[in-house]
Length: 321
Ligand SMILES: NC(=O)c1ccc[n+]([C@@H]2O[C@H](COP(=O)([O-])OP(=O)(O)OC[C@H]3O[C@@H](n4cnc5c(N)ncnc54)[C@H](O)[C@@H]3O)[C@@H](O)[C@H]2O)c1
Image (cartoon, rainbow, N blue to C red; front, side, top):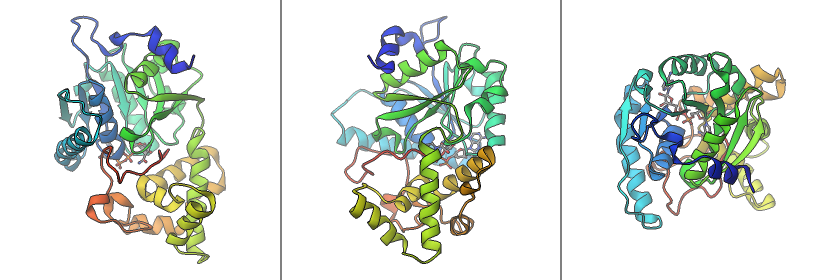
């Protein structure tokens, strides 16, 4: 039996139910960007009420509309689920997660930003709440250390686009306790996601490997060996990859790729993670990939990043960053 199925058997739906009055407790999502909205969509599809917290008024302004659009499209194209979506509350304050039994943090990939959020979550969330991070590369132990209860912290590294990818890389620290793992695996099982559990380390498995490839692909373009289209074509046509590395970087968001390389450089001390100058220049020019319409490639409005649908033009593979 897989670890996911094991946990789903062991832990029932009480997982995110308020023990005092049987009302389903909301799941908290911190960050209403590419991942936060995608994960919110997954949670509501699985029947969880959600509280989304973001400090950027623009994200709170556009989030509800983007989520509704994605939910509507997903219902139209999906397997005919007519169930009304549970409520989603939008807030600028982490204090509004006071009733959350489970929180998934999806804010920007910066160590000080996430450390501050975990300090605050530890203060505001109920003592039984699980605190998870969707970080791409920050060691979970660093986030756990700023809390009073490191046993309730773990990494839930969803893939992008979250609604159409079935597998989540789960990072367990030496101090993550068994109950936290069981509750996280049960939540994922209820969302139809398979969990691949790995030990905590910078970039875990996925991004420790993927980020080097993306950085090298950008370097190849910078050196003039081939343009971005040809680099991606080589990976698609020669290796049979569904997407080339630079289209993958654009889907992730070049700002997030840059942040992640900087985290990996800092946490490993390995100079191979030094971001390529071309990548840095693109981000400085606002070319952040699909979400801005321009990165290594250009994208018409309809193909820009947002929470995902089960639509036919979705990227066919999960992107681990
Ligand atoms: N984009 C991907 O493919 C992908 C995949 C897996 C994991 N991740 C990780 O998920 C996290 C989010 O990535 P993303 O692509 O959604 O980024 P994004 O830039 O699209 O969204 C980040 C959101 O966090 C908000 N934010 C920043 N500081 C905050 C704070 N203090 N409190 C609350 N909200 C705050 C921002 O306003 C923004 O809306 C990052 O850690 C990233 O590395 C990204």
